[in-house]
Image (cartoon, rainbow, N blue to C red):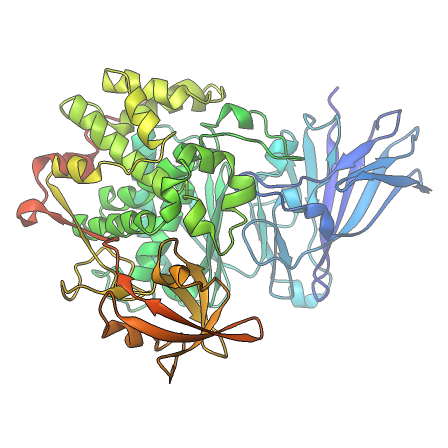
Length: 609
């Protein structure tokens, strides 16, 4: 009999941000049961050392204390015992993100990877979990929001008994507890819940209407029935924040409260912030298929104690980044013109990364653990984002397949084939699997495309591919550091550039990045330097751009800057601002038939049961 591993978790002390978590094994390893806490969480490819938050850990069996020894940074071994063994630990939870755990007097949240010890050798056993409320009348109105299955006697939204088929499932259903706002909608017959924690004035009716359209569009892309019986959007709103993490039947989201649709907003208008939030929801929901069920072979199964390397994140994260905004326009919640603005911003992000000529998206995927998630002041010069460029690879491959097949096939067909062959079967995708499948869908080898744009560092031929569907790609210089592209500029005059990105500093303008080949770097300035004066006039983060705006390329400036506590002086010859800001327009002003097939209906048929 496969005896369940039993867990309990209690918000022990919200003021001290402590969860108390126990794990009981009825038949522990006779050689001494080991317990291990994961080092990372799927979807966020960085070693996060969750064990560092374990404040205390102890074990007992039959009413007596059992000795525990720590074997490495996240593994403990208990002395052999004859009967059931319970290990208990207090976990510090003060990480307000979607990746770990957070607890205070307003709410509690945790991912299982942050709190639940795995009983080594028993990972395949069923898991039973008791979720307890905090003690005291102050918490009598708290509820629980999770997609863990309830056990008999526990109602939905209640504290009590929950279960999972195994440890992998246990840690893939995060839990929110508190006095959240709850709303519900259906998409293709599947109930979807939205819980919002934090102070807000969200128009939940509008949010549910828009999310229903997006979710239905995605379900129909892959085909009914949906792969989950119920879905949950867990939203934590703050003054300024952004982030999301996917799970098999839910997503955790961190969002600025002003990005949610507000009561009394014009329902015909989608603000930039709300569009951003819907894109985040769309991105994480698309992961329900792409990453949570269609996985790289390296993730089958997950090894959570160390890095799992793959060169394919450009497809699993990048394709998802391509489809997140595309599904907004297909669902009818934004216009085609609004989508082109977002796409232009995405192209701009990549063009402003000199590192795209040094690192391929395949290399970026492999190096995510050490480079993408641990960026420094030189990262724009050295790496490329597998999210941002991966999305453009998805766009280019989609348009390439459409062109090769006369509009009969598209990237949608590739995603559906991945779902049928890998998502429904559980078979991981081999490192060359997407290239092989792309060739099959396109009716001919895609080796040249993949060599140049996935394993190589060539810029994608977006101008040519977009022109084939009636979209013109245009470039200009950035007008300010805050200019994200996507729109036409205010003028076409030449602009001078210092070749830097700055941030606020009490002394002046701190150089956050110095771009390779830019005027500042050529003059000997470095990231971290603080410019305090240009030609004898005080410089700040706020006025530096204005001081440069009236100059021309070739002008020479006298610069004073602090490096640490040393004042330095140099001369800088301004360069020409690069044409790295993109905006897109429909040729003729309206989407042509090819663009409509791409943007509005996908040009393909969904699969059904």
